[in-house]
Image 1 (spheres, rainbow, N blue to C red):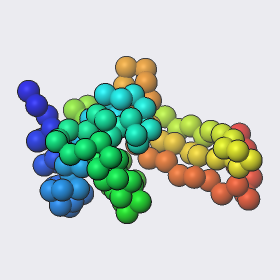
Image 2: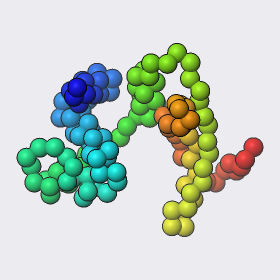
Image 3: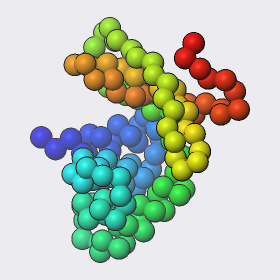
Image 4: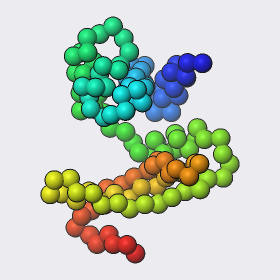
Length: 133
């Protein structure tokens, strides 16, 4: 069963995206699974359709430069697709170094089969104290 048309329809309904955006994001998600990387050049090679890889690459660049995802809607979308009545949730704060910058992120996840899948996150202000308490 090809779930791509279903996913396109779900995106259109839940996020109120036009058909082109829903198809592009669905193709991007599919490419992420196939390529197992976030490198746009690699993802472009995994995108469906007859267009040149360079055109697909530019399409991904345009999408990512113009697109913002409301993470609250995203979290609601993920939760609405899960068949479970009771959820185990996880909360995790992590601090990564990116060059000389600290990325301090708080994640909310839904746990399934021992794996926490992030559904909501917020970048914490580095000026505030965000310790282990």
